[in-house]
Image 1 (cartoon, helix red, strand yellow):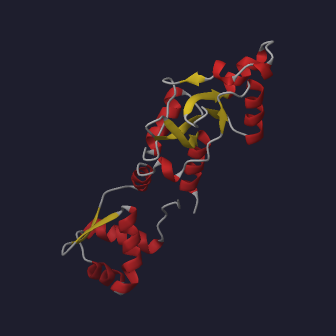
Image 2 (image 1 turned 120 degrees about the vertical axis):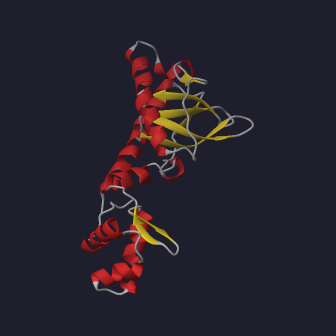
Image 3 (image 1 turned 60 degrees about the horizontal axis):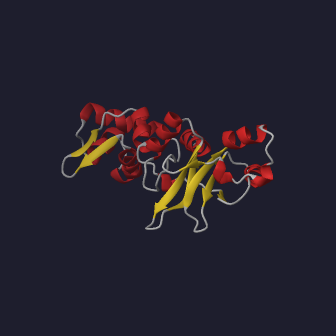
Length: 209
């Protein structure tokens, strides 16, 4: 997503509408000594961005939103399905050793554990694996189902959930990732993941040109 940054003419349009709205496109063009056709792209951008609104037979008026408010409105529209990543899953039957290898090779901080039908049954974090590896146990003989977080203690999200709501969950529960799931009659199918890295990428996208 591009940063909402107005050019000089767009800023002039906003000021004119602030002072004179509601005002027609023709009237705005007249004040700027330009044609209505020339202003049409700028008016479209300002309307889609939320700076201005338009009513038929009335004209354009200022919404009263600041740049920050416009960005906030955009953030509130973002959904999980547009920003989720590919999930990294392991079988409930694998050993802690194998899970550690998978986490290292895939360079992730959370693994989702599935049963033989590929439905979600657990979650493994770095802390879970580190805690187990500190002891003297033989990691190749310990199955991950012994140390994983199980249902119903797993927090999940769905594709239609809002990114802002998921971000609050990550912060409140102090976790690094949530599985994105699809509800089925047999269980929850893991179809993606949302992580703190996804959130950082969204933040960076707001600051890019």
